[in-house]
Length: 463
Image (cartoon, rainbow, N blue to C red):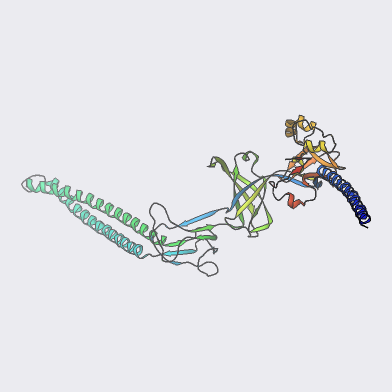
């Protein structure tokens, strides 16, 4: 029994070992197949890791423009100041009977404000009294002249009789001399009287001038509007004292006509050569983001300004504001129209900039035109004539061609910064052009989220 049992145990052990080796070999084979399959799939996936982002060729209108920013300004502004010093005691009334304030509509001659006129009224009173005094002096001088003329008449008669008698027994020499002297004095006094009248009259003129000046200063205490317009700025308050010394202080800013506005735009010196009077301009303001306004270049100011070594010229753009939407001093984003095309084929500018990696094209088993030209994604025509492309507007776009892409040489026209005009017999409306690429299996948002996202394998080799 012992030997038989030992034999059965050995037979059972040998069977167990055979099963173990058989299953182990099967497992190794399965593992090898899995490894080979995974390696093949990974290798196949490495060769097809890139998907192309495309955009359609569109047909429409295109405009070439120069962009700049500026400020909306009233076409004509009048700065109303004070010519005398004093305290503001009141404001006037506008057409609707309301107190003058921002946005008030005023007419020519409307009272805007009143300055305390107590001192100036006293000056007027004093000057008027001086005028009356000077006029009285004229009357007195005229009366004195009449008296002098009467004395002269008497002296002339006495002197005439003395000359008839002459120095004799009837008329002594002393009396003769006295008559002659009285005549000469009387004649001189008439001259003095006439001079006194002239002096008195000049004093009247001087006094009247002083009165006129005092009256003008008194009138200056009432600030009136010199034009018809709208008050866009009120720079004083009641009770505030204005001081007029060398410069007249500014009280109000009046726009004559807000229906016609100007946009003062700062244009870089590199672009000013493309700007000319009458040129169409489109602009927008942040207050109305969905609305575009039109205008035209009025004139180019020659007084350039330099800021941080950048020279700019101010261009005045005239625009109609009949709607009243444009308010003074809004910021305007303007575009000067240089040229425009209608009903042309357009592609995104990204399609003209995009180029394929030569190693990637070689890995896909496709010979890429211009792979050895040294330019990324540039075919021989474009690489050999890069300067010609810039001069004559030649460019290259890539279109899908099965699993790969192929280049098309096109003529490049106007560009608005986002889209460019293209011309080619092979390019049709609705065709897709490559504008970028992204790894297969990722969304466009993920691939574009950060250019610094690490990519361990691309094109069959680590980067």
